[in-house]
Image 1 (cartoon, rainbow, N blue to C red):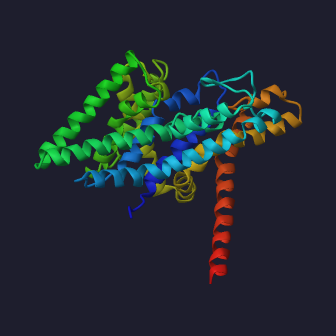
Image 2: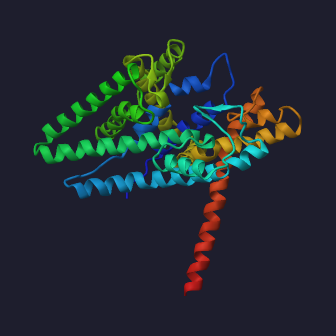
Length: 364
C-alpha cells in the first residue's frame, strides 16, 4: 500500500477548492475560474502521476494495472452519471434544471421515451455522459484515458527494451510525441475527452519523474516568480483543457509549471508551519471525489435559500453555477460546495459501516 504524503493531499485539497471557487465564480474584474484554469487540470494530472509505479512485463500485468487504477474511477463516474440521469425529470420539475439553459453542449428536456433512456445509458457507459451535475467528471474520464495511455507506453518499453536507459528514452520520446500530437489537435480537430488526455499525458509523466528525483519544491524565488508570472499570464491568454484549448504550447507549459510549483510550495509550507490548516486541507484532499461529484448539486442549497427570500427567480434556480452577486454569497457557495459533499459522504459511509456491521452480526 502506497504511503500517503500529507503535502500531496494538501495540494489536492487546494486544487479541488480552486475548482469549486471557479465553478461559482461570477466576478468579471478578475475571474478565479479563469485563473485556476491556467493550471488546475495539469496539477491534478501531475498529482495523479506522482505515485505511478508499475512493473509491466505481460498483457496480464497491463490489464490488471489498468483495472486497479481505472475501474474504481469508472464505477464512481458510472454511479453518479446514472443516478443524476435517473433524476433528470425530477430535477426539471423542481427547477434544478432549466430547459432553456445550455449546460455545456447539452440542452435538457424531459426523458419520455425508452429510446432516450437507452441512448443516454449507452453514452454514459461509453464515458460520454453529459449530466450537468456531473460536469466536473470530464476530469475523471480524461484521467482514465491518461492512465491507459501511459500504462501501454510503459508496457511496450518493457517488452521491447532490456536496457533501462533505452526504456526511459523510449518513454520520454513517446510522452513528448503525444504532447506534440495533442498540440496539433488543438489547432486541427479536437476529440472530446481524447484530445485532453493526449495533451495531459506529459504532466502525468512529469509527476512521476518529480517523485523519483525527489524534487523539493522549496525555492522561495521560484514560488514568488510563479505567483507574479501567473498573474501576468492571466491577462495574456486562456486555457480550457476540457476543450484542449490553450493559447499556444509554450503558454500551456509555462502556466503549468508556475501553477504546479506555486501549489506544491504552498502545500509543503502549510504542512510544516500551519498544523490545523494542514489537517483540514489534507482531509479535503483525501476526499476530492465526493466534492467533484456533488458540489454542483449542493450549490442548490444556497440557491433555495435565495429563492425562498425572493432574491432569485424560479428560472434562475436552474443556473448550474449558482447566482451569487456579493462576496458573502460567494463565500457561502464555496463553503457549501466543499463541506456539504464531505458531510453527505461522511453520513453515507457511517450508515454503510453500521449496516455492514449489522449484516456481519446477523450472519454469525
